[in-house]
Image (tube, rainbow, N blue to C red; front, side):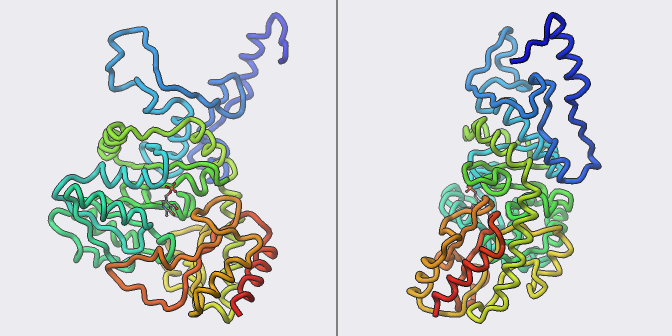
Length: 408
Ligand SMILES: Cc1ncc(COP(=O)(O)O)c(C=O)c1O
């Protein structure tokens, strides 16, 4: 501890006032914002990072405050650590508010439950994250909410899928396995004209490389488990909107479900934000190099990466996105399952596992996860998904080379 002497208090106050300001400027670029958002050193003795504020019970001096709606009354609403993460995410996404959830999936289900009632109809893209589909089919259906899946390529023809009771369109672009992009501006235009709410699982872009709220989507969902936390040690999710009325409805459901997020997890996500732009850029660059290299391999039928010029979605990607991150897939030419298993076992760096956005590269054999009802998935070969981490690109290519050789 430093003893600042008899005038220590004033001196310390002076230091705080003079040197600890985090000047936020809406004109700053994303890298600068990620280094600054959610920080306020003056509120906690000048330390650069906020403290982890744990707590269930909030204490009151005044009985009249106990049942107020405009102040925090219980820990499920989140304490200052969670608030800092929310304010950072709201700013990054360009919304009016953010709600934290204990996983990406619970953020998705919060939106699906919070904005529907019995008798309603929702539209979900056919390429949606599997558990989103499972929730619609197994839970929403049980409560009398009908789901129709639409082809990811739909664009303005989404109108043909809309019913008088359609209340919500759930988007995901690209789908996190098959990587098909959607024409989000076209879908949003139709939805807006009909007063239908749109929500997007935007985890692939981390809210950095795509700005759904800016192009008219009402709600942006992130699995913070991926890029924001970035180290495969957190499960968390967020829901950000630029619509006050939707925010209020979602907050009510959040409270009803009791799905708070721990201060530790929020703090780890905040810490992850500081390095996210650098990680994303590295992962993007490595992933694109590997994707291009895979296109040259005879074992590979097709690479599914919207930033590749060969992708049928490349024009949409160029129009709507500023980067791509580290997640993409490829289709192997048809081979027996035993060979696929031999390939998967031959990897030394890529590990098998069900996530992405962390520092470590992962590989997944995804055929069992492809569920389609609007449009048949017609590829004959096996779909392999890669989540590119922070390792050296040459080492990763050598690892893939070794694994592809095992197919022979
Ligand atoms: C696209 C997408 N959305 C949401 C989720 C759910 O995130 P979580 O694992 O935090 O529930 C995942 C997880 O893999 C995902 O890939």
